[in-house]
Length: 411
Ligand code: ADP
Ligand code: ASP
Ligand code: MG
Image (cartoon, rainbow, N blue to C red; front, side, top):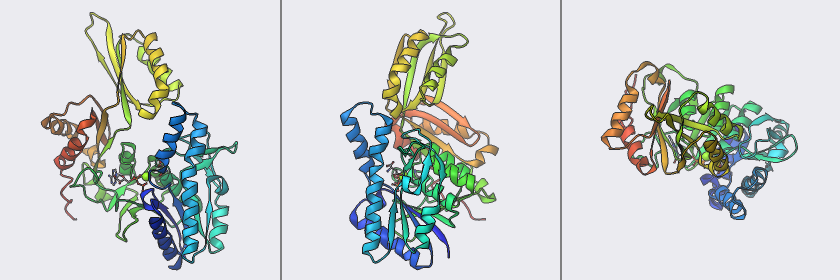
């Protein structure tokens, strides 16, 4: 008998009919002789709806209350899924984050899991019931409800799988696996049969929302093999697992894009030691994470430089007052913001041993007349910041330009 964790995303539980399908699938898995733990997301669109309600009341809602409202989406789908299983003749019990309990820190809206108590899940499945756990949510030491960040039900699933020593962790979603890029914007995207934790981690952190980044970190840390697959078919999906030889052969494994960041431009700050440190220390103190940074030195005659950086759009409203205060302190003549940007990235373990990959990326973008506003690189990725209107064009050109439209040769 195996212990199986099955996670169903928002689209998969997006209507009562779909919840009934989920119920049938879980019962079939149980009837095949397995203990089943189901993790559910909120019904599609529900989390956005709840967050929008909060923003209707106030421009910058308190994070603790945001989590109290956001977590209700998963409470509804967990109870509906348990009922649907019962309605199909199965046995099930819904469990919320605090009932499990999934203990997190108190970083509301982006909490991290500290510990999971598996005992309630074990007693539920040992009793012959399917445990239906609400994804995305946890509880902190004070008993306050927390959430794990957008897409956090993936993390709930992998963390629960690790905590209870599950034999498999299946992520059921609206695409049938991890693709070479988002199949919804690139018609030539191909399903990848298996991908290393490292590459998946990089793709996820660069915007491929098919798996939340924390879920991949936890899978890698605890060696949980994750199977990403379609909730609408039985087709084999993508296995995310430890690197093996064949994965190294591909230079670029995938292309990702991320529209969640905004560009901040501090014009004419003093070009002297300590200024950049002052800017970014002040911003970090307010718990605002900065991603890309560039400094262009203007002519030495003026003794001034421009500093440009990107932050999460969701941090911008809260961050603007601090950014502007800091800008004043370092003598910036103006602060400009641009939210119409996208970061496009190429990712691949094979880049470690290949030169010229970044140059090729720049050539491909240049050929499409796409201006690059900022660049960042690591051993296994290159990212370029470009205007958001070029998202599809840039992704498709890079995808096909690096030959990802053609399946790699066997052997
Ligand atoms: P769920 O609600 O099931 O968690 P998400 O919407 O969070 O689903 O994630 C699935 C979506 O991720 C797909 O519909 C697709 O648009 C997007 N996506 C982005 N990059 C990729 C990729 N490389 N492979 C597959 N899907 C991707
Ligand atoms: N419902 C949450 C969200 O929309 C969590 C998830 O779906 O994974 O971000
Ligand atoms: Mg998701």
